[in-house]
Image 1 (cartoon, rainbow, N blue to C red):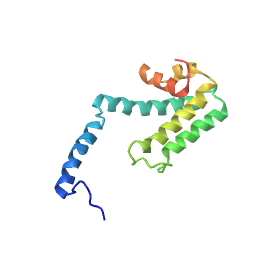
Image 2: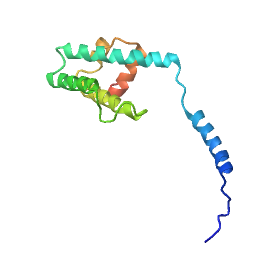
Image 3: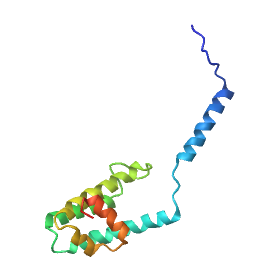
Image 4: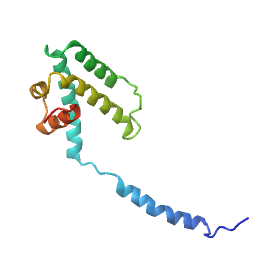
Length: 135
């Protein structure tokens, strides 16, 4: 058997882990209260947008069916990826919203979004990018 060139002790292992723990803590993004408020307002604005688009006669029935399906998926108590999994759990919801908005707003265009979006201008620009609309 060959000897390990670096002696491994429990004290050495502890010292090696501490710098990595500090790096992990430093790499975590800090979210400000203002950013949390913005996200918290964005979700209700999307709900209002979906409701208004469902009631608009210029939106074809099949696009309204997509909106209804997205609302149903988002309201279900279970997801393809559970929401309690950090980051990834919410990405499937965001992906559904982005794909449905892209499909729904591609036909009628940005005019419907401008007309129905209840939130701030910056949030509307995010929706335009998600939907692939010219901003």
